[in-house]
Length: 116
Image (cartoon, rainbow, N blue to C red; front, side):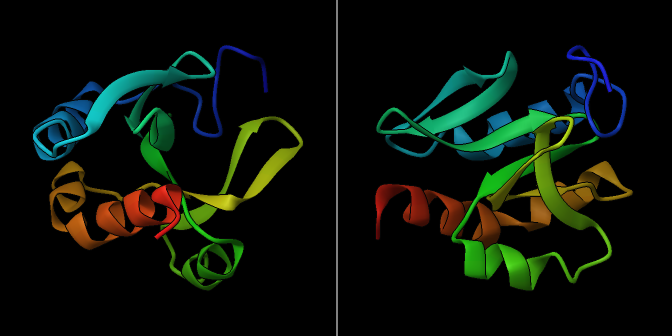
């Protein structure tokens, strides 16, 4: 995998970005940023989500991440080849509209990032 591609071969999906922008950028304290050159979402300056390839990566505790990777559409986040972040998951749903239904996951990632 080269530096310019991801686990799925593309930088990020603009349709997913639109959904994430609509859902997250209206939350007080959430702003847009970058992580490894990818669009990311931060709260109080700390990244909790990043658009990557055909999905979105979220920061969670290692225990929660380990439980969640049992889902067919969730894997550990590997921002660069061979570098797995065990406290981050990559969610790659087959349908873009499925990202609209994951508000509890987004909130959980924000709370974890804030140390709550």
